[in-house]
Length: 346
Image (cartoon, rainbow, N blue to C red; front, side, top):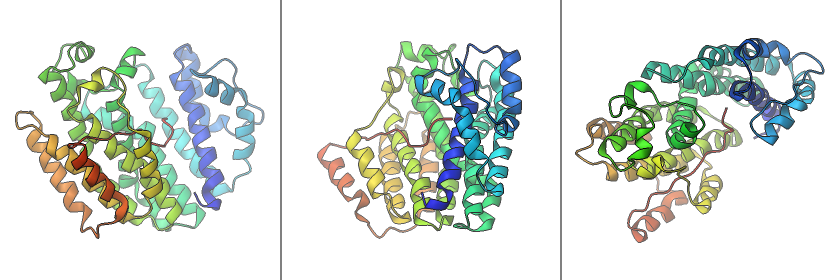
């Protein structure tokens, strides 16, 4: 990141990490959790506030124990940055509270809404911070739809990939409107990972995520500062790489699907401009397209959305970013590569 928005974005993420730590802690009773979520946007202005014995990991516990330091740094930020962070924290806290007592996500609209609260709002906040820094146009802060789309694409990818991990921890983020078409219980996919119904459900969710690609590409085209661009683009490339790996892959129901670390590093190093983003997206979309089976119930829509995304990419001047990937695809008989993404899960 450039120097100017670096601290505001760091504090933004730490504030939201604190909020998410409260939401995720299953030991907290709702009568304690709800007021914290709803009022966290005010708590971040209270000198000396911290919280003991909360958090699922040692790092999160440490953050909450020293949260007064985050508050001190937040209050040193310029007022436009503080206002943007406070507004997003308020909206996210309310959304988290609304979903806190639900045992899952029912409809696709509800899935979109949940992803909006936990990730789309992050996109809104980043656009506001970028604009306030003066490094991007003021109008970027008003691009709420595509800012939200950036977050939804990342969050849905994460939810799809983390099926088994979330299931084992008692969390259900796959929308019931989809999985109930293919199984009586969500856990049955883990019992029969190679069953056609399991793969059909997985592929339908991946197809849903593909709908967000044109909006993501539009947003990235609007980013002018090169460092801001890389900050936004690298997670998006990671996400499409992950979707290429999980599509029609029974291993999703057997564990967390991961990528080769070498490719992850390659993406980080080579994602520098829209040309490299375009080439990576074209490559991974093509990987998915080659794996679509005619008998898959979502195949027609999957292919339609892939073709739409490919058209939205525009022309390619053949940057070197993906040249080795094409070679490796031939050598490796079309092996698919996956990865995690950089943005801390909120």
